[in-house]
Image (cartoon, rainbow, N blue to C red; front, side, top):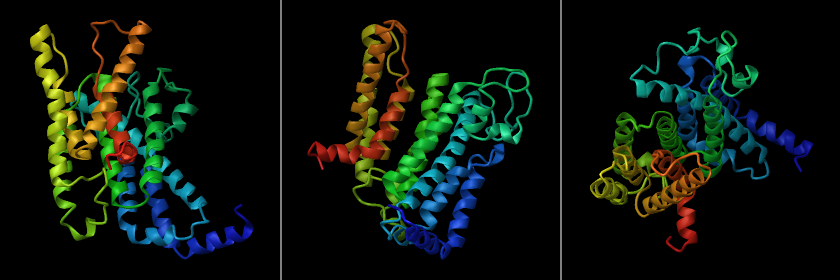
Length: 336
């Protein structure tokens, strides 16, 4: 039980680190600020906290019985993640249309009114407005709320899974990338090259740099976040090749377009990120989940046998799950 004595010890311990804790709170609150221009700062806040205070991580969590601090960190990551989710919504809406993600400020597509600060507070503004514009009563897409909520939960889970450190920073980066691709593919049916190719460059560079830069070598060798260069190269080739074959063969056999090239490139990106053999697990999860959802949609008659179903979202979800628990699953299967 968290007694009064523990409470005094808890606050006394952290008052000695008040400057650090205040800086952490400031970064997160700024990241969660509803102003459009500040929404993306949530990612920077997470990366800053995960990296800069890496050395104090052991001190902060050395008092094992003060578990409430973990809850506070998870709440802060949730708030920051919801702000990042709001920014990802902007990316999903504007990037496929070739629009700037910075300007103009967020506005209602129905009446073109610029949204006020309190209307941009992640999660809460949607609930307060009851999902409608307060001026023209146009419905606000439920997707905006779900992405903000889901990103907040994901950030909290990432902290719970990795703790503070470089792994957390990179996991946040990759998951934001996969989330943006997931939403864009569902909404627009495309996987923008700007995101996919950019992710490939980042994954490849990290696979090279993380093993030679002294202050980055704390990332565990067995981590799914940054595999070694050979593992990343093989993983990228395997992921790309597994979906390249059906993308080439299916049109030859049926005369119809099958696997999209965006999916092929995304599979290659996933392989670069998680490496080999984790890429096989990611592809397995994507194929199984995609097949199950397709079967359910057919049974419910929501889709016909000739209707296309976006595969990118299943790849993105599989990639996130593999980042979180891929090594544990392989270990349980005896492949560690």
